[in-house]
Length: 65
Image 1 (spheres, rainbow, N blue to C red):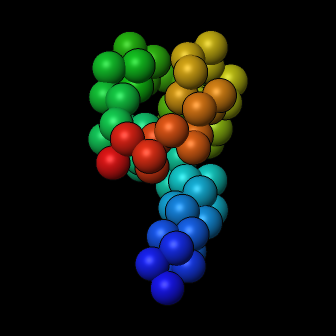
Image 2 (cartoon, rainbow, N blue to C red):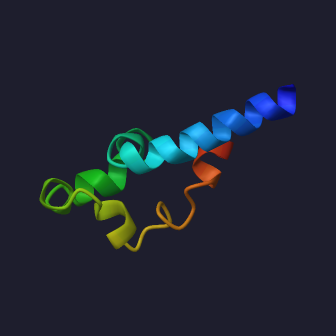
């Protein structure tokens, strides 16, 4: 059951990240967001457009927790 529970949490987090992209990065990466405050309000998905490793490593984010 532990494996199933963990898997469910990972799936939920991965899906939630897509909806809460601007929310999670702000808490996890407040530096890049502060550096790029313009593209955030202009575009709802500034993270994937940014060259930072945030969009390239969406899985390691929940693993770090």
